Each structure stands twice: as structure tokens, then as C-alpha cells.
Image (cartoon, rainbow, N blue to C red; front, top):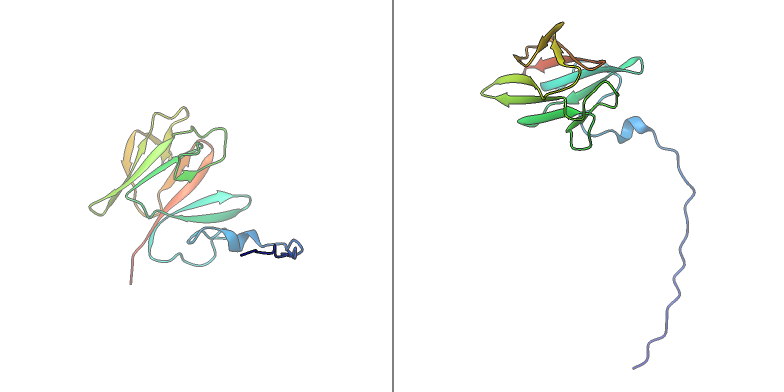
Length: 135
């Protein structure tokens, strides 16, 4: 039995421009328009707009490092800066031995419970914690 090589032709498609907003992870909305869906969120001020990031995990690591669940690309943010925990309906933020500290409503904290509307500052990054109840 002899096989003959088959010829494969590959057609290359031209590069297509994409809208990066459509490519964001599910739940992230860069413009902050409208009320977010029910859940817990951080609204992060950046580039003249607001990005909404859902807090879906029981433990969320915040920092500049590659292992952070919520990566903040600012030199004032430590690689491992803070940890957000969700347990028994309460949401807490803990400073993870950061260089510049973690602040909630203008007060430096080692650990604090978060409530809807609290302003969290990580390095120079300003975020607002949002807790939107389900209907």
C-alpha cells in the first residue's frame, strides 16, 4: 500500500482589529456605566474611567506580581500587597506586608471589614468597594 502525499494549502486571513473592551474577562466593565450586577466588586479608577472587577473568589490576592488574582500595574503597589477574604457574609481586607500600606477610608489598616462604598487605596491605586445585593 502506497500513500501519496496530499497537498495542503493554507489561506492566511488579514489581521483584523479588535475592540479590547470586548476582549475583557467576563464581568469587567471599563467604563463603569450603569449599576453593576448583584455581587461584590471593586470599582478602580484608571485612565479617566472606572473598571469594575468582580470579587468572585473566597480569597483574592491583590498586588503587582504575576501570582496576584487582581493585578495592579503601578510601581507603588507591592508584588503581594493585600488579601481580600469573603467568609460568612463578611468581606475583609488584610495588608500582606506591603511597602506602602493598605488604606480604607483614609485610615491605614492591617485588617478591616469592608462595607459598600468604602474607599480602598493600594499604593496610588484608588478603588471603591461595591456590594450590590441580589434582587
